[in-house]
Length: 193
Image (tube, rainbow, N blue to C red):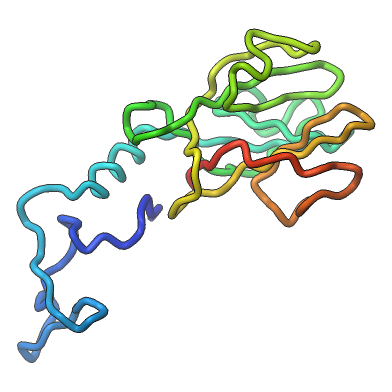
């Protein structure tokens, strides 16, 4: 299954230290070799966040346009299905949060479109507002984390000033610190892996 947080010894799902023992010795201990007390009272903070994320996230589908090599990301599979309009479906790049109240400090991810250069994604609404520089505002598509964390991958942003195109990817090895006339700009945010 998907892991939503680092190992949580306080999780209600954590077995007791002696649960699997056949000889009366603990089978699970802390790194310092001490036994721990299993939580059987309530969900831990990480348990609650994990459940909220499981039921409040949506796939972030990745497509690539075979004509111009532009990526397109959407949370609505029916928008392009298995591929359409020159785009081929590639994979689920990760997951966006759909409800900002499930985790602290989430940032909204906005989507814009300009016919000549494709889609643009940002967490800064003031960057393009309701539309600017030929971009049409398409709306809020979900929420991302502002910082790195367990089970999260960055959404990288690059810019090619020759053709005025922004390139987005979750794979740093694709362009690294820049390449193919694209300059690295920043990480837009972190999505669930």
